[in-house]
Amino acid sequence: MTTQRAAVEDTTKELRGLVYELSRRLSDHVRASVADLDLTETQANALRDLNEPLTMGELAERMCCEPPNVTFVIDRLQSRGLVERQPHPTDRRAKHLVLTAAGHELRERLLRQVTRDSPLAHLSEEDRENLRQTLLRALGRGEPTE
Amino acid sequence: MTTQRAAVEDTTKELRGLVYELSRRLSDHVRASVADLDLTETQANALRDLNEPLTMGELAERMCCEPPNVTFVIDRLQSRGLVERQPHPTDRRAKHLVLTAAGHELRERLLRQVTRDSPLAHLSEEDRENLRQTLLRALGRGEPTE
DNA sequence: TATTGTTATACTCTATAACTATA
DNA sequence: TATAGTTATAGAGTATAACAATA
Image (cartoon, rainbow over all chains, first blue to last red):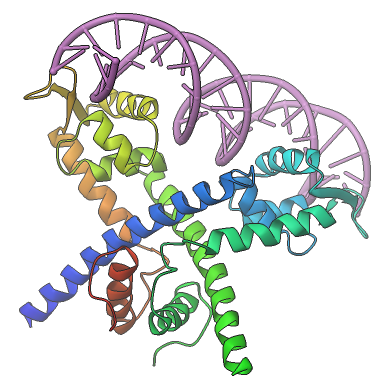
């Protein structure tokens, strides 16, 4: 039906705008939230990914950026005593990035901070559970709907 | 029940991480998508907000940044003939930012480009409709669940 | 020869402060 | 006196290219 197809296209168009807007809202929220912790958004992203030891290259891949930028960001976190460059167990070319105790502590504060007052924080419990499952599918995990 | 409360806390914790991850995925997606159009993410955000004439200050507010940054971004877009600084109808201090024909055209291409291959593009139609309604509530519009 | 990480370089983003023109 | 916008400046993010150490 042309009517139904038009409706589908309208939904697509609206969802497109909503996704774009949500993306910006969340980014703004993260940036404002972590400012209290003297972290930039990028530094916070790096800290979040370091829940396990990673090499510089692995971290670059998770952060979707180039290796030289990771060098820059890790320099900053290391100068604050949040992360250490340890020798890699098996490859002497590589570095093992490991959070210090202070790093782990700040990482936990970061995650709590970002959750609080999130644009999604005031949703109902039902919305949150539905959203959780939808997001899992959007991120390539979780079960398909049929 | 302690079991139920623990489950709620687990859901909160997981949702927190998913929201953070989605935020980064969407931002990366926008950045990669608009690179084809020779736009940075920030330039794309400005272009998107200019579907109606705005002053520099109004655009700064929508972009959640300071006025000097808007000057910089608009300089770029203006030098490419995408936007014009016109005199404001009632306040000679202010500028009226108006998209050119080329600006409107690129804006449409931008919105289509961002939609395509979005992390949310491969969701089922049911998921998309549910997500749309949830996002409307998250963004402070739409009906509450009860 | 290929890979890991760094250094060098350049452009963009972001914020603060000082300034000009207008209200 | 207050506001809209610009300019100047500085720190941070991002990418490419060239390089050193190691595989």
